Amino acid sequence: MSVLAIDTATEACSVALASEGRVWTRFEVAPREHARLCLPMIESVLAESGTHREDIEWIAFGRGPGAFTGVRVATGIAHGLALGLGVGLYPVSTLAALALRGIREEGADTLLCCLDARMGEVYWGVYRRDDVHQRDDKGQPRLLGEEQVLAPEAVSAPGVKLATALGVGRGWSAYSEDLRRALGDLPGSVQADRLPMAVDLLSIAEAQAASGKSPQSPEEAQPVYLRDRVVKEKPR
Amino acid sequence: MRVLGIETSCDETGVAVHDGERGPLAHRLHSQVDAHAVYGGVVPELASRDHVRRLAPLVEAVLAEADTPRELLDGVAYTAGPGLVGALLVGATFGRSLAWALDIPAVGIHHMEGHLLAPFLEPDAPDFPFLALLVSGGHTQLVSVTGLGAYRTLGQSIDDAAGEAFDKTAKLLGLPYPGGPELARLAEGGDPSRFDFPRPLLGRPGLDFSFSGLKTAVLYAREETPADDSRDADIARCFEEAVVETLVAKCRRALRQTGHKALVVAGGVGANRRLREALQGMTEKEQVSLHFPRLEFCTDNGAMIAYAGHRRLAAGEGTDARIEVRARWPLDSLQPPTGDSAPLSA
Image (cartoon, rainbow over all chains, first blue to last red; front, side):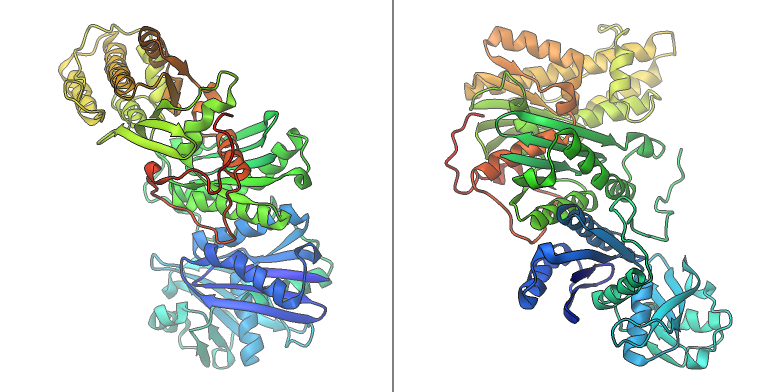
């Protein structure tokens, strides 16, 4: 059985393929190149792993939040692949993928995920490590509260011990001072250069599948933008 | 050969299946006009969001209607430009990936080539060469078409497109967006002799158009004329006359200049009744055949993209797995299909 994940929600374009207990990945930071890169990346992991496209059982994709166009590139590709291959989809949060990267790389228990949402706002999600395991990983991220888009000076992390928390994502470099003021302090450590990776999306989707959650149709598997106010002027 | 066509260059999601022998098997359009009407124009981000919501279910519905399980598709065509990049990307990522998953070829189509070839969806299709008048909200162009992918722009609007002039004038008259068709309705009861609006660039040689001055003339006429029962209808009628007369005169000039014996009209303004009647009269006098696609193929649609894609794919053309779209894309830069050995007729 083979499963595929793709993510193009931020400056990074990445794919991951798991097959027979092994994982193949591609990851490239290439703003505005995602549409050109994504299918060739998939071709390359299939070739390297000796997998046929018909062997893919489901596809996970980064459903946002993130750059609107980037989120739609992954969604459009995932929808087209799903229809062509006759498989279902797992839409996965970009912030959750970022949290899992923090768990995987730093072993953190509490994660403050923060992406630059432009227009003076951030995408914000607070996660805790859950003792659910995929393969030999260190656990899965569980969202506390809700994902939000808001001004960096308005974020909060109720009940979180900042000293042992990990800040992840580029929002931490863009708005470090605002975030520090909002929270009262900076988290114990910050990894501001981390971008979401398809390999983490894959692991989150595998955990969902293992817990009995069914994959979705393209019609159900839609982007999550968080920001829904996209028109400056009011409707007339 | 059976090709799926996808159009998402602006605010209409169009999907169709074209069969090389049987013609268009099914086509559907989801229009977002109402969603954008409250903003008085197309909001690109909202358009892209709606395409992503609608496209997959629309494709499934069209495949079912065409009695074409996905395994029976031989190719996928999608609009790759010109248009709104975010909107184009929805159709392009979906279409290219669908083709990749099915291991069949795909091709990115120039939106205006789709319009140029739309008359081939009809039984009275013209032969090459022909003259094409493309008139829509975004374009006013006269194109000499000598073969598939052999296009030469003879003239175009140097400011507003004809459809844009219709919409803007409608707005001046207080008609709801998109006002073009509303304006044509209002003009029905108007007096064509009450106002004398300019025929821009008509007195000069060349085949370019200009419509922005006409809009200004309308503005002044309305300000200077006290409101009466028929003022706005008369203005609408005289405006429409000015646009139609200009379009017809330039078409006549281009036909004489090129010697082409067929005129093809495409684009949303091609649905205008007075334009159709006036062109009918002119082409009869000039002894030239006139071809309109049916109304639903005049405006943006998936069938024309499926058809253009079929022509190019059948000739061996295809794009690789890198998905690319273009906001701008000169029509004249198109080439005949690579490795084209197909005959030029439909």
